[in-house]
Amino acid sequence: MTYLGQHIEITEQDSGWIGVWWHEGGMIQLGFFLNAPDAWQAVTELIQRDLAVRCLLGVLDEWRDHDQIDDIEYALGVNSLVEFVLA
Image: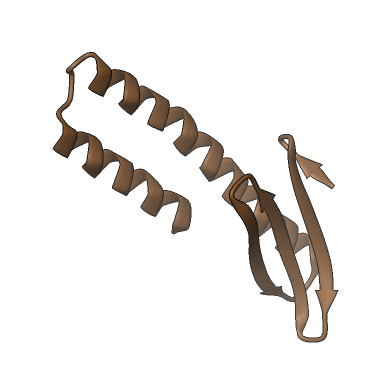
């Protein structure tokens, strides 16, 4: 299956359902869920967060390139955005 151009697999395991997102950096596995819709929901939410963060990282890059923020502010922004994806 695909969602926003990303490849997703939802599979049933003995103890529940898992969602797999084939991210450009490798496989990200989320699980175990009671049903397939819950696994799908979790994976799609992660993809949505990732997409939002990638867009915002582009803004931070541009601000840094135009000296609107310094390297410390940039690093703090990047760390906050990554934490948002993983939350």
